[in-house]
Image 1 (tube, rainbow, N blue to C red):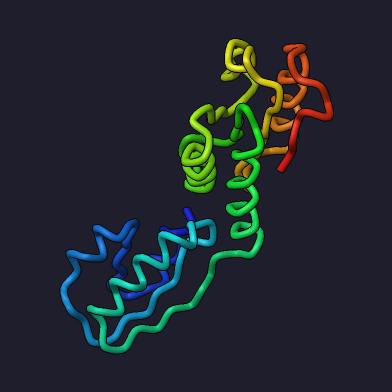
Image 2 (cartoon, rainbow, N blue to C red; image 1 turned 180 degrees about the vertical axis):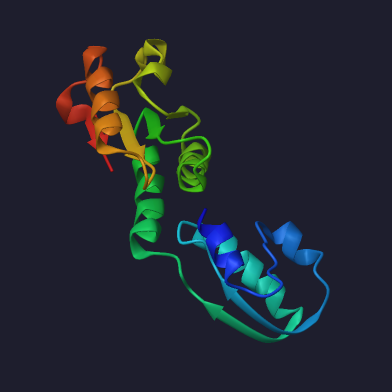
Length: 164
């Protein structure tokens, strides 16, 4: 939705999702770049580096919001500290998918769920510490329900449940 809204305000927009897409662009004289507010900074840096070789006059406005940058850094350390990592959020949410991807890079026992019904009690059998994070647009009541369900499995004590 955010990307579509930005595109509607621009003449001849080009959407680049990853460095591979940036590499195939032709050379251009003048380009302005904005980013989705929940985009991973590492991805943006790679794209900008490529664009710098293809665009004579490149203007970049960093529109990645601070809470998103902070959340990306926090989930990295949270995933490393936890035996299992649960990311709560829609599978259509770019932010939730990025959080899951970042966590999974550091903890292979990372699972993305949309609600309490997606949880599998078997995931928690060999887990002393559970990390929980959620996408920016995930409603609080869904987060609370998932956390309550995790506690009900009986394998996790309150002090072993780490929130982001």
